Length: 175
Image 1 (cartoon, helix red, strand yellow):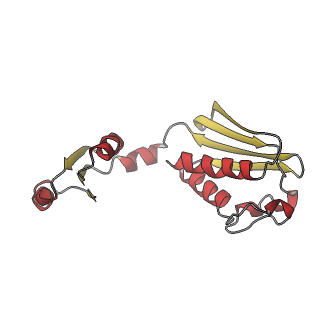
Image 2: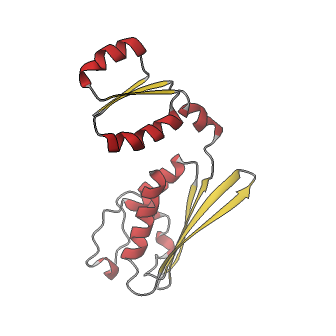
Image 3: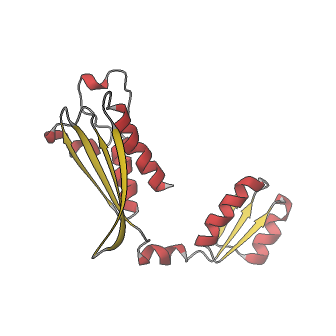
């Protein structure tokens, strides 16, 4: 989910500021002393960002001023949000740009969760889910199976109190 949001923000900017030319996404696998990694590179042939503003575009609510903004509303939150999410994934975002030639954004994240994140994920021993939407439950069960030792699903909200008293789950998710 976080990776999707990261890429959505970066690709949205690339598409927004590329009137003519192209936007390209490349995905590669890499490995170094940090372990296996995925590298996502977004290149565009858009308006570009002045060198003195490259760091500022990661500040919340900051936008590069200029005629390229006409008709392209934004809040200045996309790149800061993408960077924050990437850092939560223990990755990095780098940006290179040349005015009039385009921009390249590189997102480098571990292919595996760091050991501390895996341990934190396994701290949740049990989850009780109360929902009657079978379609939603199908996807949610699969996600929870990776994060919790046991998952109990109830479709009858009348049985919740008894189940909580009996099972003492770490987490309860209610519809």
